[in-house]
Amino acid sequence: RAIFCAAQSIVSGDVQLVMIVGLESNSSAALVFGAAEAVGRWNLLPRARLAVRSLAGAEGALRGAGIASGDVAIVKEGDGSARLVSNVLDELEARHEQWGLVSAGGLALLLERT
Image (tube, rainbow, N blue to C red; front, side, top):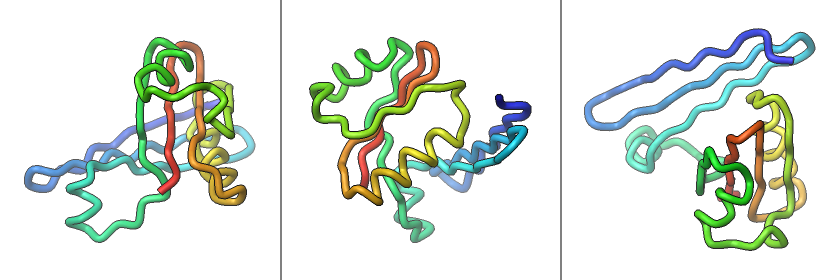
C-alpha cells in the first residue's frame, strides 16, 4: 500500500521531465517521464515508451493504441504504485516482450519496450 507519492516537474527551456516517487511500507520506486525532446537533449536512455494512458481502463488503452489484448504480454493490476510500472519494465526486458499494461482502478498505462 502506497504511503507517499510525490511528483516533481523539471522544466528547462521547452522540454519537461516529470519524476514520480512512490514510497511504500516495504519498497520504493522512482520513475522519470519525459518527452522525446528531453531524451535527446539530455542523452537519456529510455527503458520504454508510454504509448497510451487512459482513464477508461485497460480496454481504453488498448483501443487508443489500436492493439488487441493478445498483443500485450505483461499486465499488472494494483494500487497504482510506481513499483508496478518498474516490475512491468523489468519483465518486458527479461522476456524480450514489446507491450506491458499497468492498471489501477480506471487508470491504465500501456508501455512499449524500446
